Amino acid sequence: MGKGDRFERQATALQLILVDDHSIFVDGLAAWIRPSRQVKLKAVAEDLKGGKAFVDKGGFDVLLADLNLPRIGPGQALEITHFCSQVKFSREQRPSI
Image 1 (cartoon, one colour):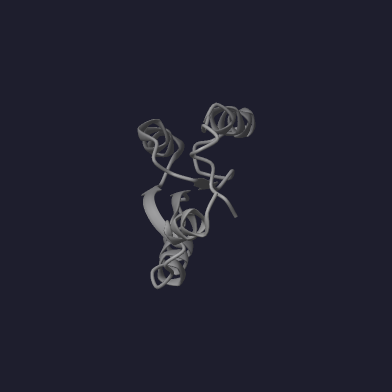
Image 2 (cartoon, one colour; image 1 turned 90 degrees about the vertical axis):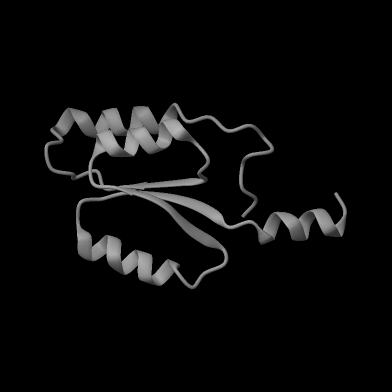
């Protein structure tokens, strides 16, 4: 890998999907991320169903999810971790951090 390859990789922003129902947290995180060239808030979902829809579309690097979403019972937190574990990246897609 040459110098140009490494620079190109670092110039690509980390794509973040956020699943959270607390608007004050979402708005605060979005305001903090907005000026960054390193992280881009790709999508926001307020519930697990919306989060799954964004994950199915792909094109992200990080999924940040609230495990205490409304309408999620104790067993459904396991569903979230299971659904996150199903996300697969090829070696080329994994971000270099």
